[in-house]
Amino acid sequence: MEEKKLAIIATKGSLDWAYPPFILSSTAAALGYEVEIFFTFYGLQLLKKKLDLEVTPLGNPGMPMPMAMDKWFPVILTALPGMQAMMTGMMKKKMADKGVASLEELRELCQEADVKLIACQMTVDLFDMNPSDFIDGIEYAGAARFFEFAGESDICLYI
Image (cartoon, rainbow, N blue to C red):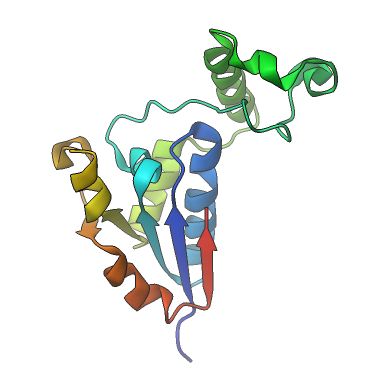
């Protein structure tokens, strides 16, 4: 029986968007899938050695907020200075309190499970990114390389 394949395109570089590609990939790998994640544009932030990601409450009206703030706190006020840092701190604390693995741990778990992490070479070049800022063990390739795998995948997700 041929191994199932999962292909993910990761395009977001915020804390709240960083978890889905790593959680889904590590889970699929544990279930026996062959998995590749193609990181492009802001998703490349997830491959940096030093993860300094924040939550993006602005433009995310579905985000549950403490003290039922999502019911009475106007979304526009999340743009106030310091709000993003406050929301990030609250999210990190909640995740730690609930025993959710850190992004670094999830990313390492993916690498240990042979999930291929592919950095979009075009985006690296476009934004003059330094490959020494990225973790070891990743591959650099273009979209055509990703399509070779995605075209044969059973599941393809855009996150």
